[in-house]
Length: 109
Ligand SMILES: [Zn+2]
Ligand SMILES: [Zn+2]
Image 1 (spheres, rainbow, N blue to C red):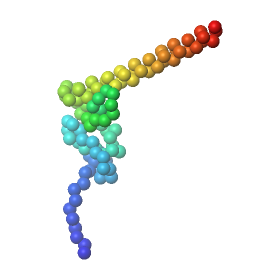
Image 2 (cartoon, rainbow, N blue to C red; image 1 turned 60 degrees about the horizontal axis):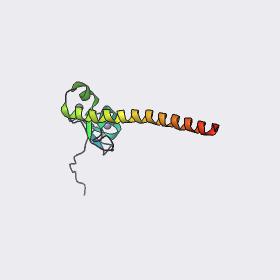
Image 3 (cartoon, helix red, strand yellow; image 1 turned 120 degrees about the vertical axis):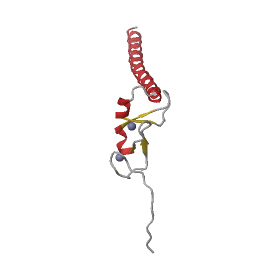
Image 4 (cartoon, protein in one colour; image 1 turned 90 degrees about the vertical axis):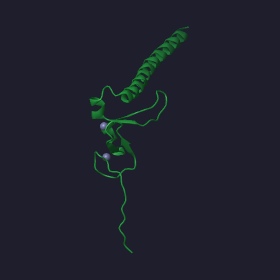
């Protein structure tokens, strides 16, 4: 027997396909993009020191809504993550220099 049945599929608003199961929805405009098109937006994390989070925004919504309170809160987390990365890079460099200096002095003795 052949029977037609109606099914609901998620269609990506960027590439117009239903190829992917993972979708991200913009928290401002509700635009839905698939995993392949995730670079059309920015995925924010919920914490500075842990991975995970579902704050997703289209790049255009980020640009057009600089005062959105939730977006600002996500951006504050992102800023701190970047600050920590930058600080760690400097700290690693200083650590290596200090250790190399000590090593050099010990070798001279
Ligand atoms: Zn897509
Ligand atoms: Zn959006």
